[in-house]
Length: 84
Image (tube, rainbow, N blue to C red; front, side, top):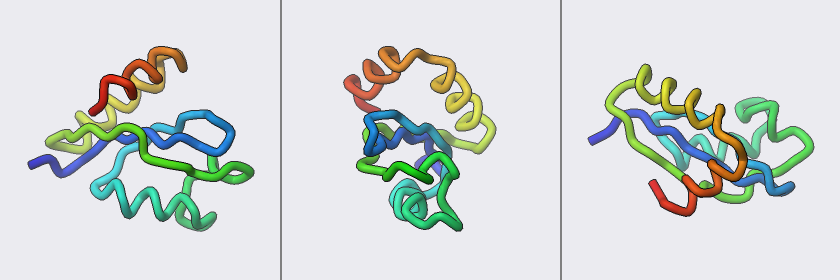
């Protein structure tokens, strides 16, 4: 059982947002609230969680998040297509 997750959300403008959380569904809902959601979603709306990957601890999840953020958009789309 994983306690931390790296996730990717597709936004209304087609861009991809990557983050970490302990509860992907709760965090997705929070992105609709400007007080709890990421500033990234001001001016765009979250559409769907398109990728989620479990990790045993926060550190490994954050390392994976950083690695994903360094990928090109095409590489992230390929990651999403493979599933997680």
